[in-house]
Length: 480
Image (cartoon, helix red, strand yellow):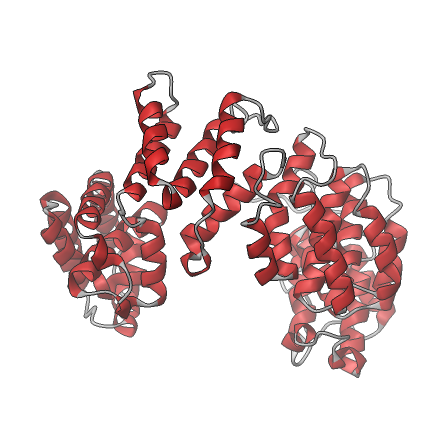
């Protein structure tokens, strides 16, 4: 591969030992070093060099008030260097947003509650560059200084929804990190609640929809207990709420990734929304990647939640969808999943999430099946070689599960793979797995990749067999 020709105007590219150690102590010398930087790679390296010279750098994030380290000599040097690094903002030319070096440095200056950085942000709010002004608003809100809060709440009501989104995210982070007092946090929760519950006018634009998408998570950052209760309440679950898709996506995420926090939704709240979306009475924000504006996606999620409390009507609606030849494939899949839930079949992903946190909560038979699902999940995301590297100590239990499920082809591939890996050492515990997989040669790695390609052809059948087993014995997959 041809080497990139260095830019003759960039003296830093000629220095293979960049950044210099130690960094210049004299502020003018340090400013000249920063001024020479033309490449983001060098700015990023300089940020980590600055962080590396601060003893106890983690203490920057440890305090809910201006951290004590900011008042030490080292802390003041750290702050001044970050201010010098970020004097001229660096944004990504193609994708927008802060470059990684400035993303890190701006965040640290927020946690330090740097007064000089706050003053700089206030000036940048007036920038004609949209991304620049929005980023300044987000970080000023995140800093949570009391004098800036009236201005931030006014910006939270602006007609420019892109600005609203950045300010909402900054305020949510300020609450999450304890940068604001309890009264400000309550005011923030109330303001975000009005948006997520459809109590303010929302234009049918993609910018507004992107703000609504993040609002449930922002509410949880402000007050998780109140947010979860609100998102299940009649105030949020009604057919006139333009944020309904965002709320449903959030409930789906909680059900899948945090099943201990999930609670069934009231079917009497779900069905009116379902009817309004199906008939077109409720209009979703149009999206380029949804030919129907997301209608089928929302209907599928609503069916799944309705099935938890009203299996009779859910079965009827699912049959109507499955009998209709015009039904979308994705909606058909969601209808079949909802029918399984009506029959009491556990959700494999939700059970697997519980299993990862408490593997001892299930019996031997269920453990074998869950180790199989764990292998399938890992192969889909990272491939078979990384399954052995990350979870190889469990491969024999997974093999026993495949044998129990009758997946002979997949069992043969897994056994051959396991024997190959164990020819380099033991797989009995985590330490042994790390040593063994780290010691495999290139030929073995290539062979394991080929085994992974073969396993990929079995994954759908394995998942179906595991779901059938869970459907036959649903009680085994509830925690003991």
